[in-house]
Image (cartoon, rainbow, N blue to C red; front, top):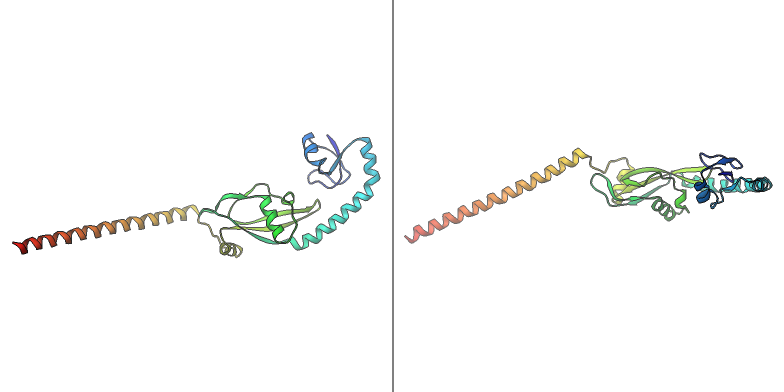
Length: 208
């Protein structure tokens, strides 16, 4: 399907460009979101008549987005999540989670403005682009941690996770400690039995 773009669309073109896109992309996204018009003769004429208004509105929206972006760019938000020792989250962080966290921080951000190719599934700091306008994009730092303390450590550049080798060593140490503890208990039990037996022998000798 050929459409007339009503705003800049990344990887497609600028406002006023006539481009060919897949029918599903046009019907499900571009047309209902009022980002494009079908490229008919009537719509071409309509666009040319309204071009000046559309460009003026786009410029105004861009300025507003730039004003918000100047405050939002470089902002950092903390998301507390449960995770394994190796840093794997029990779940994930989605665009909705990030949008809600930024909104709580005082920025009105929709999840559709969060540019995240895949959900975040590990602890750490992640730079995530926020598209405030087709021509305005800023980055925010998402600090995913198990606690406020860990988030502060990550912000200082510390690694709060345990790698595979360290994890195996830690597991081995725990197992060794448990083994020796069990062995110590067994030895104490044996010593107690020996003491009891010696006392019984002594009592028998006294009675004799």
